[in-house]
Image (tube, rainbow, N blue to C red; front, top):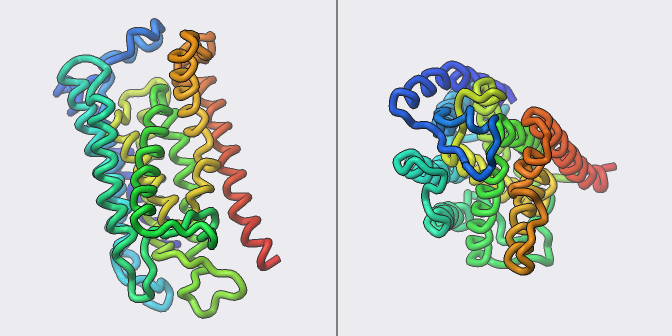
Length: 365
């Protein structure tokens, strides 16, 4: 646990102190966020020109903190860690974070260059996410460790494999890519209000710190583990990457909370979604993800419902989608929306962790 705490602290410090530097640099380059004019809200007019691409800071902070975390692990007795340096799990998780972030970076760059809020077209964005998911899905399913365990499973998972839902490696790689696309777009749709996506992602990632460390303490690779164990590859690595990301986001939230001095942009939102999707696959908690990330699901569904309703009946269910903008147009203040949506996210995380622990108690209790 020491390495996770150190990594989180290092990431927090880097993000907290480097974000102001990024703000000044992006302002000098005139990397400002274009605003959706159809919102017609005075509060959003004041955000025009606020630096974007802030995700670059917390992605780099997470990668650096991960390296520091491994330096800490290297100073500990091998018997205390059951760990042997950076792993394929770390490569997959950080790779998703970085390369989904690169897809978002391209989108942000085009928005800034064209001076509008459209950026990369939807097809190009999805293709980029699919390719990233496909590549790291292959790494996750075709590179076993010495015990024959891969990063992701060829089963559908809830809290571990569901035995009767084996779908094979090829289908699992496609599923892996789909989860990356769904999660990254879910976080991206949630972004749009100061601190909303950042604070929500902190809660979901913190849940994966707890899940990863609990799996590490009850790993099947440990012969002393009684009764119940988790057949998960590199669970400490899961906790380490998630912990570093939590620290980096806390540091970023200092500057991203209302009134935001910088936005994460698609760089941060797509990167975070890719990481969260990867954590769900690596920890074998795929079907738990829609509960832990319940807020992302609700907001994504609001967009889907709006599109289906408008195309089929010509009527809109919400004043505007995603859902947070519906409440803005209904007269709610931005801070109230963010806090209440954080509460919804926290409820989903609490239920998800409760189900995870209940599964453990059902066997050992």
